[in-house]
Picture: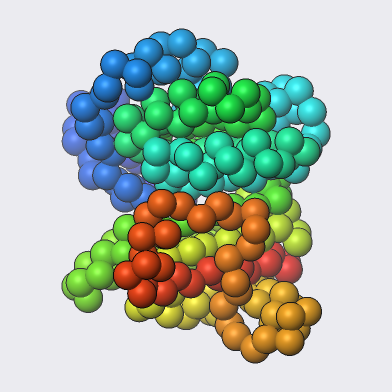
Length: 249
């Protein structure tokens, strides 16, 4: 969205007019359990991040200059917490619109003793635009996004050219956009969009050459935990496709 468009939207809002804007997800409140509500009340002050039109200072937020990994749509947060626990030399930021998932993530992070994780309960497009500094991320993760499997709904998929370019500006040169999906058609869509995206290169060839494999996809890296959802899919014979593109310019 251009600055001019954003100014027009802000003006309309100030005048009390309703303007429908594009979102990466539909925000869903859901019903909180007592444990999730308690986690939000207790741990949000230290682990929660609020959306504002001010860029984050990662050194101030985390107290160090470690590489920052951003995950979009972390669900209930179990795998994100596991990644943060397994990589204390990195900082993690998670974005999730489903409030019960945020509460569950905070509770799990506390139980695991994780302190290198911060979370947003907000739309990813707005967080990227307003809060994340340019060329500041080492990795962006998008695991099992809504596939919108009906053809007429494909335009709602989050992996689209405009969104990818918004990610590009936030990744450092050499930073990686890591996607995973269990829908083959969406995997093909991701590859198609990324192949056309300026400034990105598929690193599957580089990774697979080390293992004497040839594919445009990569095997699930050890850094991405195998979720219960994914384990069930494997038992049912479902495929999972991991895709990794590096920012090269």
